[in-house]
Image (cartoon, rainbow, N blue to C red; front, top):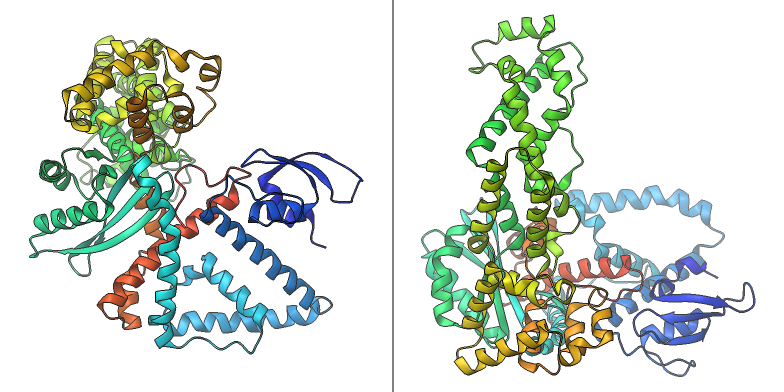
Amino acid sequence: MPAESEKWGWKHVSVFGGFDRGSGTKRWTCNHCNQRYNGSYSRVRAHLLGYNGLGVKPCPAIDNSVRETFTMFDKDRVANKLMKKKNKGTCSMRNHQTDYVDDVVARFFYVDGLNVNAVNSAYFREMVRTVGAFGPTYELPSMENLSSTLLSKEKLRLDRALTLARESWPNTGCTILCVNRLDGSLGCFCVNFFVASPRGVMFLKEVDIIEGDVPDNLFIDELTNVIAEVNPSNVFQVITRIGGQVSDVFESVILSKFPNIFWSHCTSHSVLLLMEEMADLDWVKEVVSGAREIEKCVSDFQTSSSTCTDIDIKGSTDKVSQKYAPSFLLVRKILDIKSTLCELVVREEWKQWRLGNALEFGFNVEEIIARETFWDRANLMVEVFEPFMRLLATFDVDKSIMGDVYNWQVLSLEALRNKGVKDELLSNQVEMLVENRWDKLFSPLHGVAYMLHPKYYGNGQCNNKSLMRAWNATLERYEGGFEARRVLREELGVYWRAEVCFGEEDAAECRNNMDPVTWWENFGFETPRLQTLAIKILSQIPSAAIMCEESWQLCDSMPCREAVEKLGFGSDQAKDFVFVRNNLKLQALRHRKVGSQSGSGCGNWGICC
């Protein structure tokens, strides 16, 4: 019998008691639907997989896409069980054969020049396990079947799985994500189009934009076609990560065609730009310039000198600062090793090295290190940046929900004001920059989501000019008629005053510990227009960084185009192949998330299928 820890189903229930010790019979509660049962693992498995007749009911909170994932987990467990049974008593023979099998697998990758990262693919491992369980009589499918029958079958399966996501779009709205991937070998870039909703992210299509193809018009035409395919009434916003010029120039063109759709900048990219603008302030830039000169000079000395030094000027485990504020990270590192730097520049080895490299450096590093004003400004820069970076480290910008990023801005400015920075003039300069740049870099939806997120209720939003401007801008685009906007304004007042069901004890208790969309579904029914708007805004994904950094970088070493050429697909087959390949990649990401979560369902922003 497999150990209880090997049974995937236990991760999705909470055990609160047992009967006979060692019998496997326990009292448990489903983490998805909160129903309680008595029984062994067979009942847990039946409840999660949707089986009847074992004394439990199928879990009503699990949809088909998640249940399909659980089915895959179960198949893997059964396959592993069969393999263990088959190999029982033959461990020595198996160990002897492992080296030979490894050699055969390696030759397969080497002879065809395949991407060796494929060994980390869940699909590759599933294939190997399944073929091994079937046995030596299995015959591989032909090339013709791979490019026709089997490809069509897999596309049909994905289409069925994606139907659940499509059916949710009218209620929650969805976000179109436009993400580019540069292909330097062909002098073009591919634009990948995705659709994101609480049901997950799905890939729609890939378009090559080549110089000479009138790329401006091509991008607009393709995005227009994507919006029409999804249905403009379902599309709530568009997020682009294909370059600032395209976003700025063509926003007005797209919005003139679809006046009720919001055009948003990627949250992660906007935070990055805001931190870069802070680093570009004159007094900050001077400090960063001096820190970079010190870094370059010390690094060159360490490279060319035979003398060992214990200065680690580049090493850091602060991933958040590396991504959003590398200048801040460098200055903080220089400050940390100030005493070591002061000792270094008076050493004889340093002086001799500097004499031999005087022409290479047009600046006086020793003078910078000796200048107290440099260290004072460096300390001031760290004081100013630190509240922003500390709060950025408390949540994942790339996977945050609407409203959280605006809260980051609010808390950061409050922390900066409360810190009592010595130079109040320069501190105020940073505050003004953040407030003035917010409207340009961030969508009004961020502000409205902050207003409507129950967790941030009562933070004085009605007195905040920036938030009220965001609210008015959102209403102008969301509702074309004055009467509809008036109703929304009145319902917002009901929400702020905690009237009707908003004033109930349960509504107040659940503000901080319930998903915001679920909260509005439960307590917003007496303000139906505001409820609809809140659900749609709080259901949108705010960042395209997940697609830029998490999924597509996994296959950059072998773009879809190369795979298509190797397989010799026609144009229609090629489109099906790209669709299937990219959605399977998203499905693999989702399976990893579901498998790593203990009883949390598919989680926020799970991948479709």
